[in-house]
Image (tube, rainbow, N blue to C red; front, side):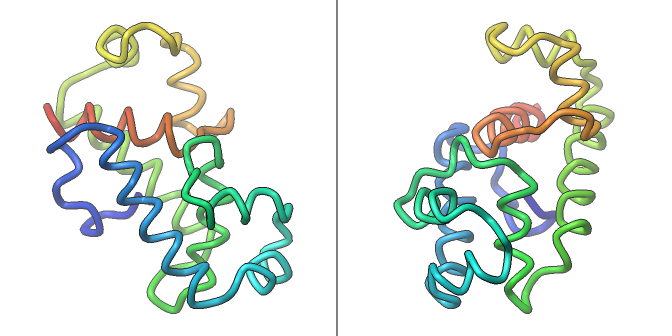
Length: 140
């Protein structure tokens, strides 16, 4: 989700990239403890437990950023989210892909307009969706 943290984002597949995101989140949860993460982020206990159990696919980018922000290794949650969205926007520019192209190459389960709204932050994006888009753009 952060520049430089996943230099091989375009290699392997989107599931491997999602697993790499999960590893980073799990390290923060392990360092802080599940109860402290819940207390400090205000996230629902079920969301943090889901992350701790290795199931990050349905967790939103904002929730993941709240967890990462607990670590001194990361900026605040708003900064993480902004940088993550910038990665996708810049990736689309670099790969010369518009939302129609991204939607087509992702298999059509996300509509172009939905992708645009998610990338721009007008609609929540899950880490699973983020990983699929990030991987696609980096592979181009």
